Amino acid sequence: MRDVSKFLSGFRRFQHNYLGARRSYFDRLVKEGQHPTALIVACCDSRCDPALLMDCDPGDMFVVRNVANLVPPYQQAGAFAATSSAIAFAVHNLEVEHVIVMGHAQCGGIRALMDHKPVACDEDQLIAKWLGIAEDARRQTLHSLPDKSPETLAQACEQAAILISLGNLMSYPWIRSRVEAGTLLLLGWYFDMINGELLQYEPDSGEFRALVSHQGIGRSTEHLWWKAPG
Ligand SMILES: [Zn+2]
Image (cartoon, rainbow, N blue to C red; front, side):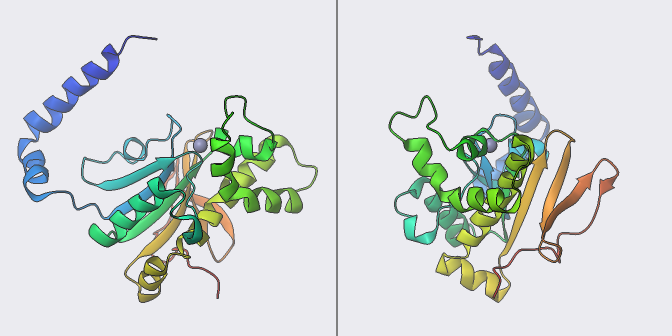
């Protein structure tokens, strides 16, 4: 499809919704700047736009998207600065209250990690180096779930990688200090696009469980935030 007319008609609807019907709302965003309360680290996957999934307005969430929604550890922040600089801006300048790492089902990046063979288009090893951030998730998955199907392993690794990224967030001293002071909460979410549900990691059970199922919103997030063990 070379036609971009769908995008243009979509922008026409945006003009109508925000520059027409809700002009004062958008004027305030322009005059007062953005004040999102959450940073979401999401995948580049075209099916996982956080603002669309959460039905958000402009200004609601600050989003950084990358392959497989990974956060590099503090020691590698300079090498992967596109993500770490966005995190720094959200925490230091916007003073967000939540950092949410949102993984998803059928993640191509995690599939490539689990396959552990060069991606055909990755002749410069850019994807492989990036996915190396989650190598421990791959190892843990293969160790804990031997002989499982590729689908089961992929889902387990998608969720394990979220925990790797949450752990990496805590390696940033200015994030750890805020989490320990209670001014910043870290959450691990998983978009189960197969069942159409949003899951959240529960530290007490060590499992991802439905946060928003087809029956509704299951539980409050307030007591379910993630914190590094110890
Ligand atoms: Zn993905």
